Length: 371
Image 1 (cartoon, one colour):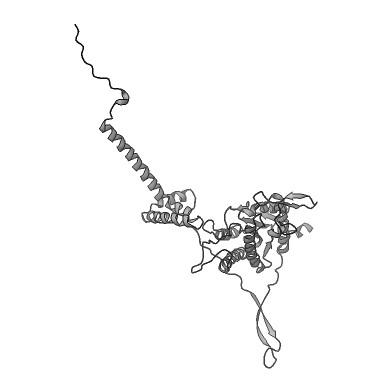
Image 2 (cartoon, rainbow, N blue to C red):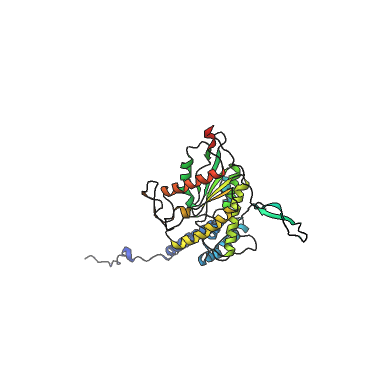
């Protein structure tokens, strides 16, 4: 008779106990992978600290920016101290890309001195002989420079996004005049302006461009992104208050006038497009304040700078916002984009006609046709 042997119960796969050594090995591997990932991210952050700091620095003023700077600032300082920023700088230099320095320096030329003349005030002295002195006078209008197809007027158009549509309209308006030559495409840079040279330094760019390209006339439009309190690139010991107050306006006018002088002193005339009315009443009021600052600086440079009142050109008969305006035949045409801020092609054409009129007041680009 066969003797039955007792069999041990068969272990099911899901009931198998984990080997302590194997489990420890898994945990060790996961921890090592996590540590490597953290170290890689940390090294990448140090290598890219300059760009991280610049990105944070360019954020609008506020608590979020201050908190982020509290982390990005020390990260950048450690990176620079350990020279961990050097590899990225070498790589960017090798591919021809600018290093991520924050450029807030604003270098502006000295404004031209007022023209004076000697005058005599009759009966001013005790003997009635008069008193001699100097009195500021308006400079005489310079003779218009004459441009021809052999020596064309080189013009450049630059500014924020609001310059793009009217800029192309100006191209079209001058398109058949061989005495006018456009330099490059529209240099329209979205979300830039004169209050944030750290975002884009227009003061340096304009100075380089007008001299390098020998520009005769430039069309500017700035201000659409400048209606806020925050400014970078302030002179030492200069502070500003809220948007539109006396200190803010003084500094903004200094920048506007300085950009005009930069172009003028390089030999270029300036046509500056004011900001248009928008479908936002608050924004329109802020933009009118910016327009007053621009117009005031343009008036100080009569004969060399013309101010184009886009606000008035694109308003209706009551001075209100108008998405549609009548054309020369009295038919309504859409002149404003759906965002209530930018221009449609027809709106750009309205502005371009005024630009051409103002240009012809400053330079002669038509008499060559009579030869």
